[in-house]
Image (cartoon, rainbow, N blue to C red; front, side, top):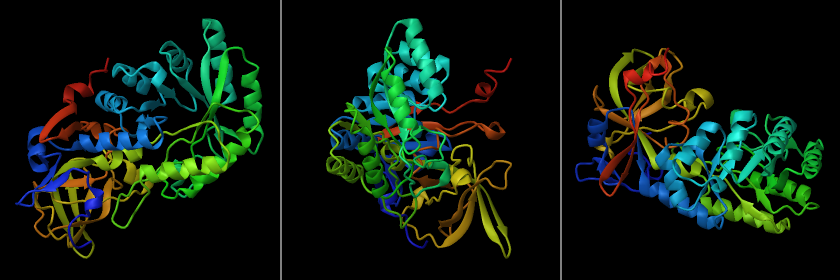
Length: 423
């Protein structure tokens, strides 16, 4: 793709100095790579706060940050500071949220297979909503509440039978799903009746999630219609429409803003006669475009009649999305942001897998050399959180930048960290 990187794929507070150096939050990316090493996740903190505030305003405060997109102690603290609740799906995510001093009542607990330990933890920490996903979980939670003499506010996760236009691995609203009680089968109605018979469980409402990386608001509106019709006889206090709003990753893609998404959902709720409080759980749309990942080029290998391979010091361990979903990305040179990118290469990682490909067709300038810092934008969601130590590669540091100052919020792993749990 000849020409400079598209501005719309970069964090809000991106700037280019007179020497065409790329700055985010007033910090030079090349200098950040020197100071903190690579691979490195760089987040525009003001961008993060802006998206949190947009979501809070759009849903009148009834919004939870989906922590699975990106979670560390400081991110949990930031989202809570900006008025968001937190959506967690495991005991680990709950632990980090509480470690960040997020009150239990401001946390929503998800998960299709919560263990007894996790359910006990949710009750002990006073989690505000437990989203129940199955009859087995209903039985476990009911018994735990009876044994401990407490009650729990729950939402039932229902499957509306709406298929979102996204990758099958992140589509969750269709009938054939591991998540939730299906409406069409009658299981959702059966779950409602079972909860209403329990003296320990307070059914606060319904939850649905149709999938992730969805660009069209129509499936969300369709799901609202199904939920509203099902909920009409019960007068539930709350209806959660989940998350799933997509973001552009490559040139030519476009997605609704959080505000546009909220307006479409709330309009659909109004038309369907929903009187309940309407809540949501955005994640990717809060954090994805707030970050770039920095890599150092280590090897450039030309294979005549085929292609040129450019290898960097990260790969599928810090961004597994291309391997999992065939996700597309762009790349640029932070030292020359406006340089024409006229050469196509295959950008690959350092892992022992031929499939360790970050970008199949990456456009780079002619003067790319070994030792250059390369950046991939829109890596703020599901990179750090889905990362691994494959090949015992050290997991990257994470820095937040704003007003010309970087602050490390997650330290780079050391070799000693790799054996810390060995016995």
